[in-house]
Amino acid sequence: MNDIWGYQPTTGYTAGASLIGYKVEATDGSIGKVDKHSDEVGAAYLVVDTGVWIFGKHVLLPAGTVSTIDEAEKKIYVARTKAEIKDAPEFDKDKHLGDAGYHEQVGIYYGGHHRA
Image (cartoon, rainbow, N blue to C red):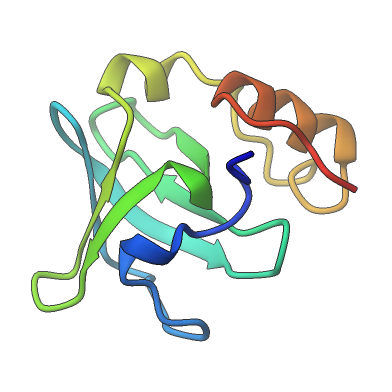
């Protein structure tokens, strides 16, 4: 089973590398920039500041949605459409840390299952 909360080995992600400021590209266009990220085993994610695309909104993307990281271009490509990302459970900066229910909701939305 694919772990939605982990980077796939084919992404080119290097553990410990900072992705803050990288542009994030959905399958059909740019969605914003990385504001925050974690590479914690079993709970890796990106928080993307969508800027004017979804005004003032941040989205939480599990690391398993990342298809490729282009370090030279400072871009992260995710295997989801803009509509899929826009319709995801709303990011809650207070809930996303330590709220297993929220992580489970996001994980199920993106097609994974939460593993404790």
